[in-house]
Amino acid sequence: MDAFSQIENELGKHFYWHLAAINDDIEPEKMQVLWQDIATRYHESQRAYHTLSHVQQLFAQFEQIKQHLYEPHIIALALFFHDVIYDPTRSDNELKSAEYAVEALTHLTAKQCQHAYSLIMMTANHQIIRTDEGSGKNKDNAKEKESDAAYLLDMDLSILGASWSEYQQYARGVRQEYAHVSDVDYRVGRIAVLERLLAHPTLYLTDYYHSRLEEQARHNINCEIKILHAS
Image (spheres, rainbow, N blue to C red):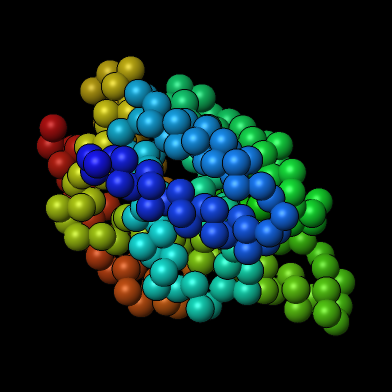
């Protein structure tokens, strides 16, 4: 079994487990068909960073913070689906991924599907979408959802705070995905994206990730900007 097949197999086991944990009435054959479609999409040729290796990296993070989550199974499913639709030439990938998730997760309740949809949509701009949940128990539920969303968004940006060598690999992957963009245009656009990130008071929303990755992430981003300016 090659490395990609091993990643697909291991992630498939995680997918089955989290989906069955929410609804154990789902037939294994249906879960397998769904997972195969998801895996096939993550193997598409236009992907270099947004592959199953990215999902694997996210689940390495998930294992470290799952005890902080109120609804870990929903967060896990959001991780699987958040990049399931990915075309670097389009700007609606998160919307399409969220719609795909709702269509695929027919065995979840409407409320669970809406939660997964909202979580995926938040990855478009990495900002928590807050809703007015009233007071009392509903307000507590809103806080729990916001906490889970913060961890999801921080996991998705955890690559920014990885070691410099891992960050470089990530940056090369992103450039490869935008091979249709000229070097000049990519340099201008990428610098603008990175500078917007640095303009945020904090890159990470949770204390857990802020204390561990904030400093390294800002260092990595500044290094990439310097390299882009020099190229």
